[in-house]
Length: 430
Image (cartoon, one colour):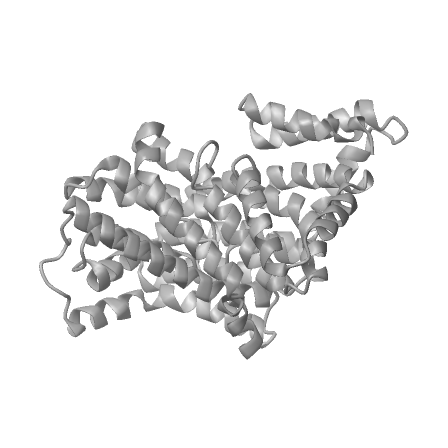
């Protein structure tokens, strides 16, 4: 393998260093390969690869679940979940910050996107936290960190992407995400409690909510809480495919918003379509570009060479997972989670499976790892979304972020060492 074979990779990181958008960087590096490195292959191959990569029925799950998440915001479901979270956790130390974390866990079954959750909660909760005396930068960091939970609890879009690339069951990936997502929630809530005690952040409620209050709000929120359970059961018993589950989620959200809560208006539909199209287009453009770049890696034999090198150097599965975690954290600093899944799964999964690591367990590790990277500088997507909306300086964000980064990495370590955290539910129910 020559230096010229690796030149598109070098160009890609140069473009990242110049802060060129991810999709444009991927396309430029791929175009360089087809235009100057591989002169034997027709130039049209790059475009054909991008188009062919999208000719996959399961990819429809992405726009469907994205649209469902947007509908839930307009349907008033998100607000009801926030009230439920406040009743359950508002009495704790740092009450509104705890609500922030808990709401992300609840939203995991609805939006499926860390970026969507980060944007929504920054607009909705950060101003409320600031009114209660929380530092704005701290509130922003809590929002970005808690958004790491959202894509891990099904129906996370990153779980769908991994299942498609790795050729594993989407239903297994969904089930495998529940316990790791809840573990992330618990660890982040403990972190919030410790920091709130040090900084003196008070509860948002004077006393614990009564069972009557919780029960009444639970009834009002039950329609939202039923969706993740319904999707898993539908997949488990073969009622619908993962793609069809996305369509069911959209119809369900429209029904709840228009008929049950009666907050969804005809005038909202144009906004829902616009937001859904823009969000989906951004994700799919990155996926197209990542697929084209992944095709270059495959044609040059880089995944096979990389796998051989790792296998010859490391024979212990735990050591391998620790090395891969460090690698993915670094890769995730520059790549968006979806594109990193497409690029890195063909490189790393063959190595993991040869050492006896379950593909479903490995997929959850990748998803958690790359989501954590979205929380961190220099180009973490959740970081940029939250600081741009909340108008927080990046240095203030970084100052408050390090305890949460340590907590998230600790959760990743537990997940790597104890695979049953991810595998217990799939092995029990599927």
